[in-house]
Structure formats: structure tokens, C-alpha cells
Image 1 (cartoon, rainbow, N blue to C red):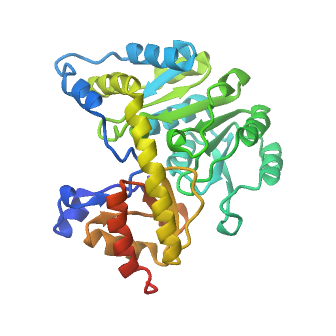
Image 2 (image 1 turned 90 degrees about the horizontal axis):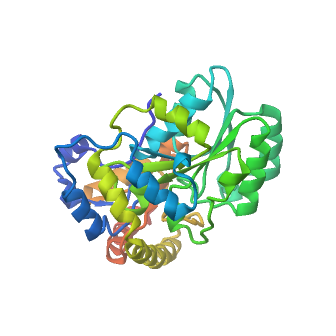
Length: 353
């Protein structure tokens, strides 16, 4: 299967007579400030004539020092998507069970399916605020005994952010039969952040992080995973040579030294999210209580609303592929950009479209 993703497509923009520079992109959940100047400088100065380090050693050493783990516990990849697929290939055998907390990122199911797993899902519903019923989930895990379970926290696209205690309970249950893959991609922008790194010492968990999101590196693709050294070694054998290019490695290293840029982005997200949620409520557009840097909004026919907004030069994520055809996902951007979106939504959605 090929998962459906958001993001701008050149062919669609051309059909509408639009250039990328004419569209405000609310469909990608990345740092609204873009890459920092320090990151841009490092990327521009990367040696394009030399092969990149196949194992991203310098970047892994910097991450290890920052996180207080061993270098052997870190796997760097060409975006978090590559790491999801490498983990599934390394850990799942055909016919084994995988479990996915849905609705969520489509690459989990794709990776499990390509690895030959039989997939079971635990699906949250809107009437319960998209919160998974934890007691029922624990029973399902005990019954299914999955080899690999996928949990995105905060979750994409709902924004639900589970507490440390809940995640620890789920990890403990899954560890009886396999491993929990905890996707931390949106944790840097969570309203109530908590450090997942100590979970690594408890075992039975692989922690996935995406520098694409918090440092706006979507164009070069960069992510990393924290896992037991033996698993990292197996995944590395499956990874294509030179998977992570020199520009990505240089940008990632510079990003680690620029926490101030991320702090500034968090303030922008916090202010803009408060504004956007308030205005959506005023327009009587139901939105989830997201703990991340995006909100999920019920607008009726999501496909129609997305296209109407795109014609106005604003891209949102149609959530039909998540099984939510009446919802759009809106990434949080700068306040002035959010104001433009609210103005457009007032005309396109508030009349009952």
C-alpha cells in the first residue's frame, strides 16, 4: 500500500495556476519559522563533493551527548519514515501481529504490511475526544500479543497527547510480547512536554523523533530513533548506503546547537494556537483540544473545503485518508497567517459548506 500524505503537489498547483510561493502551507506540521539562520548556513557550507558519513557518526555523537544515551543506541535516518520501515523489517516476521493506535500516520500500516505482519487496530472516536480507551487497549494487547505496536504521541492528526503514566502502562503491556514504537515527532511542540528518553532503559520501546518537524528540515529529510543497540545494529544493516546526505547531517548538527530558535517557535505556536482555536469556536467549527502544533477541525466535506481554500492560496490537510472525511488538519503558523486562514474559513465554511 502507498499511504496518502499531505503537502503541496506541483501538478495540482500548476493546474490551479499557482506557484508554491503563492500558497501558505497549513498542511505540513513543521516549525512555522522555518530553518534557523544557523542551520541554513551549515547546510549551504556542506561539502557536496564528498560522500556523507554512512553512519552519521558525528551527528549521533552529538545526539548521544545531548540525550544522555550511548551512540550505539541511536539510528539516524532519511526522515522518520525510513526508520519506521527499517524497524518493521528488522523486527517483524511474516504472520506476526502488529498493533496500531488509530487514526494515525499511514506509514505505520504500510511498513507493517510490507513486513508481512497481520495488523490489528485500536481506533479512537470523536465522541470520546479521540482518546483511546486505555483499559480496552490493555485487554486488546493482552489478547493480540503484538510483536510491534505503533503509537504516535502527540498523535497525528488528532493532537491527543498521552501522559507518561499511560504510555508506561502501554509499553509494559506490549513488552510482554514485543516492542512499542513511540513516535515523538510532535513532542517538541507539545503543550505539556515530558521526556520519553528514560523509557529506553525500561526496555521494550523504540523512540522515534523527527528533526524534519521541529527544525523545519522537510526538504532534506532527517530523523532518528533511540533503541537497544542490538536492534540498531540490525537496522543499520538494512539501511541503504549514504541514506542520510551531507546537507542533512550538517543541518541536523547545527540545529542541535540552536535551541533558541526552537524556543521562539514554541512561543509562536502557543500564541497562534490560542488565537486559532478561539476563532474556530466563534465560527462554530468544532476543533479537538490538540496538545500539538496543529488542530483537527470538523468542516463538513473536507475535500471540498481543502480545494476551496487552496484556490485562495491556503493549503490544509484533508483527513479523508485518516478515515475522517469531514475533518481538516490545520498546522499552526504565525498569527498573521492564521488570521488570513480564519478570514477564508469564515467565508467558505461558516455558511454551512
